[in-house]
Every structure is written in structure tokens, then in C-alpha cells.
Amino acid sequence: MSPDGRSVDMSTYITHVELANPVITAAGCAGTGRELAPFFDLGRLGAHTTRSITMAPRAGRPTPRMTETPSGLLNAVGLPGPGIEVFLDRELPWLAQRSIRTIVSIGGGSVAEYTALARRLAGAPGVTAVEVNLACPNIEDRGRVFARDGAASAEVVASVRTVIPDDVPVVAKLSPDVTDIVTVAAACAQGGADALSMINNPLGMSIDTDTMRPALAAVSGGLSGPAVRPLAVRCVWQVYNALPLVPIIGVGGVTTGRDALEMILAGACAVAVGTALFHDPLAAVRILKELEELLAARGIHRLADAVGRAHRPPGSGSRHLEESSL
Amino acid sequence: MLTTRRVDAYHALTVVAPGIAERYRPGHFVSVAVGGPGTPMVTRRALAVHDVKPDYGGTVDFVIAVSGPGTAWLADRRARDTLDLVGPLGRAFPLPRDPVNCVLVGGEYGSATLFGLADVLLRRHCRVDFVLGAASADRVFGALRARRMGETATLTTEDGSLGLRGRVADVLPGVIADVRADVIYACGPMGMLRGVTAVGIEFDIPVQVAVEEAMACGIGVCMTCVLPVIGDDGVTRMVRACAEGPVFRGERVRFDDIGTIPFDALGAPGGGSARNVT
Image (cartoon, rainbow over all chains, first blue to last red; front, side):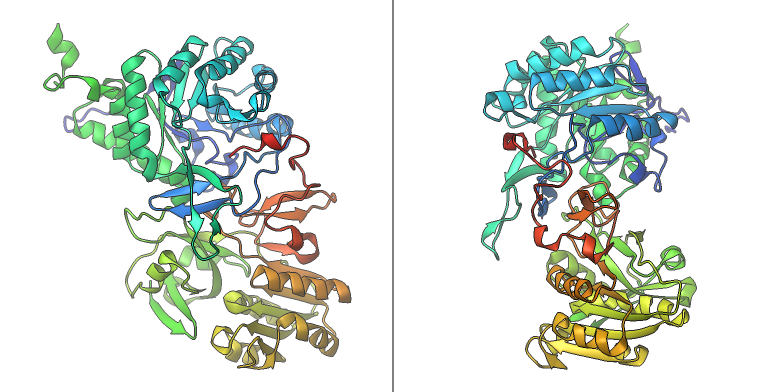
């Protein structure tokens, strides 16, 4: 409730799909959903994002898969999972039965594999949106990651878009390890991405000074947690600035409502919570509550009014912009 | 938080946590956030439960070894500080239905987990014998209590500073033969669990091991604490120590393959090694 007693309309849209609120779980950070069920009702969130689903079962990377870094976490987990058939058979129905809005993340090694995954998802009940994890090595391009290149990313997105029904948004998940994220974002939007999600983990590395060897079995890994938040905010800001009409899911080190608000002010219409869930299983619902209070305290009655607000020139941040501009 | 105290090379913490004490069964663990609000340490630490008592509505004891800034922060906590705990977590030790002879084997502070188990086994009229070991005398945890609770307590140290010189797996065959053991329960470092499991297989008696793997979340979402375990169907899977464990049947754990993805594990990279992604 705001000081004037009005509650905040927290609803948000990924194109035409309405989410009750902007706080969602980040891909690969909330398991199958079942693991978090003892802590809170996932239905209270805007949506749950699955781990990246692959065609075949995957064992993932050897251990050690994780090492803690200052305000962050390096991980090289390697998309472990049972494959799409088991996902459709056991995991998605569990979420659908509970009416949990579900964004299904998919990962593949070729355009054909992404397309095949999309085709398997196309008819499945309970898919709110499909997120294309582009940070996967392209086996047809000597293992270069799709997300590194606008054309490769756009090709995947376009192919998935043609297979997924029109009423299910396709979200492209972008990596910050690129020369110009705006170029990749624009290519994905051009390719048919309905929304963009950023950022995926930037790559980092840590060396164990006792063993004098890389800390992770995979040598390098994805960096996540508060350490990457400024990088995520910068990417969201740049892409919103260039493509103000494309919905953005802001991801990267959000641990408080204030962090979520920062992401929204930069241009995100939804915010995904990832590493914070490892530290605090209740993080997502706490962030949602804190965000609502912060908006109310600023006299903002609709979340939508805060999206991209930091882009407005100074002095134009009046409380009743729409009304006063008439 | 009630008290912290030093026990030889370790720190013991007692925390008032009625919700955890009430639901605890031997083998369960608890995860704790370290560093306080705004901490740069984003992963939780997994702590084995040493003991629960009914005092103050329910208290829980942990034993920790200081091995980095997180455990050092924990060791510095004082009475009336609060701790962010989640638990009890994981799969508890399965218990025998009949009053059988149990050998409880602990390495380093892994033995802390065994005393709650010994309590339950003794209440079921099982015979309990302890084998505890570590590198040196100050790293053997709970020797006095093991002597008090167990029919026998055999101690080993690698430097010979306490009990027999050697490792627990060296003395275990003798203990098994002496007490005509029906089952082994073990907790400690991976190498020790491997040795104990090999002895159990040699004597054809079941071994229940509680593993220690590095965890970030403790609740099954981060997928970092995996190890290769053979399922009921004979298929090896990379399973989570926190959610499917930490207790496993020893002979099902592929100790020699820990730190790798065995080629025959479900979903192991075959053919397309370029498909490994972070």
C-alpha cells in the first residue's frame, strides 16, 4: 500500500501475455519447481523459469562445478537434466497442475536441435513462454556459442519462432560476453524474438592457490550473483534505449527489492531471481514484497509506470506524468 | 545461538531451533547462511547435525572445522547472535528393524553425525561399536562419548598420537569379525568412505555412508553437489548429495569416479564432446 492507501498494480506483460507480477525465477536456479515448493507457493511469482531443457538426458559437468567468488558464484554445471521427454512427462505437468506460469528454457547444439525442442513443446499444455538459451556451443560452428553472434542467434530464434504457436512468446536469452549487446539484441528482435532476457552468466575463472589448479573442473565457468548486477543493468539500459518496445526480462545478481527496482528503472518489465535462491530459498517472494513497498513509497501505483523510468530526462519524473502532460 | 565452544581442532555450536530439532532424524543436515546481512558470501554452508536436545524447546548442535572465511565467521558467533538456518535437509540413515550389531565409523569431524544415530540404534536394542579416526589426536572427534556409548570404541590416528596408528579401514575388518557386525554406518571424508565401503563389500555386509560434498544451496536447486551413484535399475546417474543423499548405500557410490562423469552414466557426453556447455 502506498502512503495514499492505494495498492500497486504489479501486473506486467511479456508482449500480450500477462504475468501477475514481474518477479520470476531464473533459468537453472529453481530446479524443477518441486524443490522450492516446501518454502513457498511458486504460483505467487510472475512465472517460474525451468532449467534449460535439452533433447537428450545430460549428466552435466564433472565436479567441482562451483566456487564462491566475492559477491558471486562461478559455476560450470553443464545443463544437467533428464531430457525433453522426461520433462514433458513428469516436470511440466506438475507445474501445469498447480497453474504455475512456466517459462520453458531450451538449450541445443544446433539450429535443428532447438527447432526439434520447440516442436516438442509446441503442443504441450502449460507453456507460458519459451526462453531460448543462446549460450550453448554451436556444434556446426566449432563450438562457438550462438549468443556471441547476432546472425547465429537470430537464426535460432527465427527457427523456434516459426514452430512455437503465435500466442506463446519466444524470449531470447542474451550473453554479455559480446562486443555489442545491442547488435545481438536487435538481430534477435529482427529474427522474431518477442522479448529478450539478459544477462546470461559472463564467463569467469578462479584458481585455487593451494592446489595451484583451476578451481572448477571445467576450468572456466559462468559468474553470477551481485558481482554481475552492474553489468546486467548496463545491458538492460543499452538495449531498452535502442529497442524501447521489446519487453526485457532483467537477470543478474538481483537479491533485494531495490535491486529489482534498479533493473526495472533501467528498462526491464520483469526481473528474474537466480543465485539469490541458493542463499535464501524465500528470496523471490521477499523481493516481490520489497519491490511493491518501494514502488508504493515512491507514489508509483502501476509497475508499468516504473519500467525504463531512469531513461526520462531529469525533472520529468513527475508523479502524474500522463495527467500533467495533457 | 546459544553457545560456541572449541573441541580440540573443531568448534561446536549449539543453536535454539525447535522446528529443526522436532523433525530431525540421524543423517539429516542443515544449511546456514554465513557472513550476516549483505554478505559477499552467496553460498550456504552445509552442516551435519551432531545432536538435538529438548532444552529451550529444542536445540541443535553442530561441529565445524574452520576451513575458510565462512566457517571462520561461524566459529566467531556468540550467545544471542542469530543464525539463518534451513533444515532438516536430506535423506536420513535408514534404520534396521531388528536389534542387529552396528559398527559406526567416523573420520575427522564426520563422527559428529554418528552420535544421534547411536542414540536411536541403542533405543532399538542394537549393539553399537565405534571406529573413529583422523590424522592426529586433536582431529578425532567424540572419542570419550564413543567410549561411553559404544560396546567398544576403536580409535586410529595416522600419526599414532591416539589409539592405533593407521586408518579406520585398516582396523575395521578386525572389529567386524570381533563384534560379528551386521551393518556399517560411516561418515567422513570421501577417501575414508571408499575404504570403509570396500571392507563392507569384502565382508558382504551393508554399508550406509553419509557423504560430504561442496554445496551451494543444500535444497536441490544449484546442481553442484553431484556424484555418480548406481540406481536400483543398475544405471549410474549424477545425483545430488543434498537431495538424493547425503546418505547412500556405500556399494552404490562410484567412489573411484567422483570428480568425473563416468562414460556409462546417464547423459554422459558421448561422441559430441563439443556439446559440453557451462
